[in-house]
Length: 354
Image 1 (cartoon, rainbow, N blue to C red):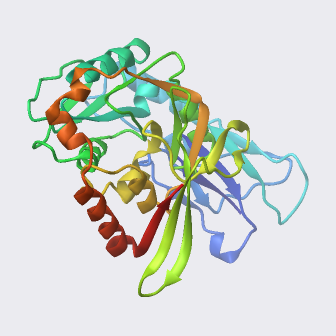
Image 2 (cartoon, rainbow, N blue to C red; image 1 turned 90 degrees about the vertical axis):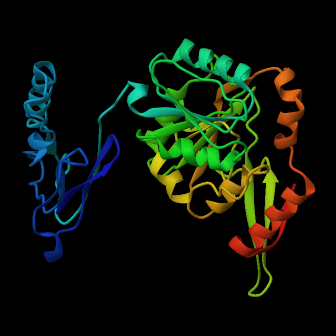
Image 3 (tube, rainbow, N blue to C red; image 1 turned 180 degrees about the vertical axis):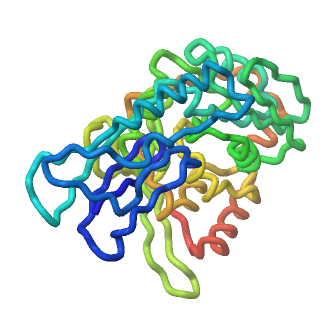
């Protein structure tokens, strides 16, 4: 029995043992937007067989479709009609695993860059200029909760003004909620793109391992990744969570510069749908980053890669203003509230950092 499983821009051709339950030919509808057989596709050993349903993978023939786009779609469907599978070994009651990759080189169709800003427009404009040096048409989404707002304009830039001082995670939620691409790249507003900020390298890792949800890079060569270790406790008090700086696990197959971990720095590529499911707790306004990965522990699969780096701008007068510092650095009340939130939400009696 034969079938497909679609993973974003990657189509996985999976073959299962013949059984009565899987004998009926079923198709995934093309609104994914790919159409492909899910089950019931049977082939003969050592024989080429056209994959059914592929020519109707994309249809866009309404009156609003331009002639150029229509011609492209017709050509694409004609090519897909010729896609076939040929088994190379003679065997019965067995299965093969085949990968068919549709590679997209246009980063702007896959990635949106997101950031949150507060009272740092000078830094923000340096960031935007550096992005445009390397990625001229990638969409940029800015969540802004400044008290004294300035209008940020530019092609493919969306600037969302929030009520003042809503906080770090509320801004992240707003920015990510507006992403329509498969991935988003999170950056701080005082970062700066360089020739080593290769978004496509992070996309390649994510495409090669569809189970990954977040891949972090490095900031000025520092990856700042950490492992989260949970120690079981009793039912009443809960357990303890240890955040171990520099903690990581095995390397990714084929990517020796990347390793599995539990949390990464504020420069990361993520699958939009996976992050939206976890979300950023807006109750955490002043002291929050690791907390997102704590909430995602057991749900998000995270990796860190040292070969993709972004720069950090020098400190300016914006970082020293009394208004900025008032909201930038948490007080003791913020820290205590965070610990209480962890206890009630995640049933933790303690969090340790090391």
